[in-house]
Image 1 (cartoon, rainbow, N blue to C red):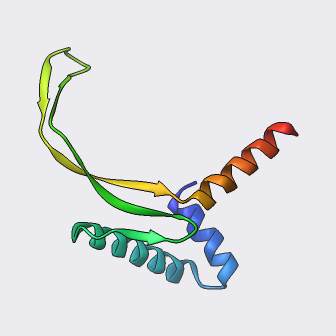
Image 2 (cartoon, rainbow, N blue to C red; image 1 turned 45 degrees about the vertical axis):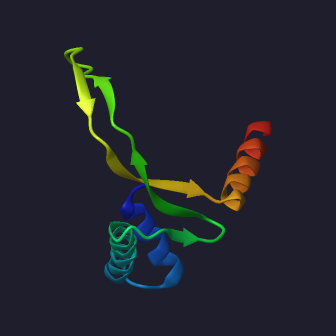
Length: 99
């Protein structure tokens, strides 16, 4: 599913225009990005949370050349789904597999 697909679905469900819906979605994503840049955790109860994780420096290999490279410490965004979301997906997946 793409952003355009989401805009179409939300626009149809809410009665907003696609332009207005896209503006809302862009604002939503921008708010999450801004919060993470301020190193704040973003939580949606029943859905999950976005936070930052520090990855330790490590040695790796360039897959194209096989040369060893050094990856410095870095901060990466992570998403942790809520138990409700995980259970919902698990129930749907198991239901669809049995049919």
